[in-house]
Length: 371
Image (cartoon, rainbow, N blue to C red; front, side):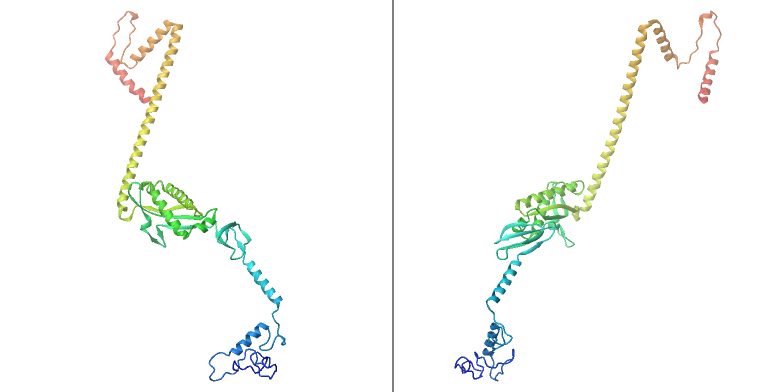
């Protein structure tokens, strides 16, 4: 029906069953489109208005508010709908924080409070928002190598003795006790940890000689780098805690590895010889100490024996002098080849001294063999 046809319905106050656009006469079934003319290429505005009116009234199309089966939206319906929307809006502020996590609640974009594990509620958007962060989760950052590839621009460093070392290491980190600093003060946290780790390791390596880095002071390099990283991140208020630094590899660069190995072997050989010399010196010192102790003990014994003899001499000088004389003669003539003759008989005997001497010489080996 054309738009300017107002013959039916409300316009004339009569119902001629023409079914005008605002009338209440017989209507087509719900959803059925009126027949279109061959030259009609646009939508039927009349039918669209009728559908809109029907939906607003809650009834059938064209049927009016009192049509059977229809129900109009009243004030109570709008109150129920508003209450449901309000409840859903408040329910959007309920959130759960799992174990090992903290919730950072912001009010109008600024930090307001920190929540612990459990069920919590915050004011719905746009008043408050929450960001949950895993504070106990340990994360890692590789420096000098990633994705199975070596990165020389990160791993090659200058040592304290002006040598070059190739270092690969891993940094283990997690959030600190202030996760709000992590949320508000940092961005691209992995890149931040990578830059700080490389800077701290270069400073630590620049203080240490190459030999100590690759052999005896690996743990000192790890601890020093960790402490230096933590100091730098604390100065940034980054909310990041460095758990540990692990050296994966610390060697000389590939082009000079053979020469470095030769130097290392020579250094090891020199160290071995030094240790041998120190061991020999220690042995000689022990022998000298033992000799000194033996001589001191012998001298102490001789002095003690002399004191005992002197005490006896004071008690009986004549007997003591005779005993000393005999002991002295015994020591003097004990190993000499001699023959003692008692001259008190007054007769000069004939003694075959050469035969006696040979007899004693032959008897000495026999006694030693018997022993």
